[in-house]
Amino acid sequence: MFIAIQHEITDPELFWQKASGALTHPPTGMRLHSTMVSEQLHVCQCMWEAESIDSVRDFLEPELASSSVNTYYQIDPDKAIG
Image (cartoon, rainbow, N blue to C red):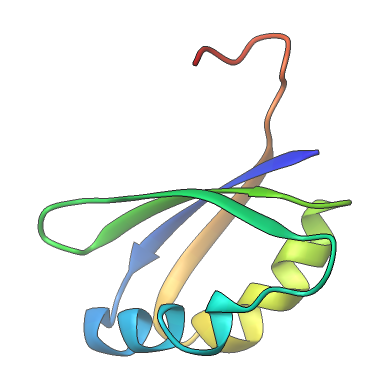
């Protein structure tokens, strides 16, 4: 399944440090497809492929929760464009 996450970044320095560190090596079965970043580095949207939203959330939250508010949702492939 495809999962999108919107990160509302509250601490850009910490967020990008975490995102470019340990989070670049996701567990087997989980893949980051895209990352879209606002010019001011305060909003980021990512597209993951994984078995569940919980698996992505369990991977990301321990690292990112202190630097961003994260909203997760499943993508409906029949309605997605692009």
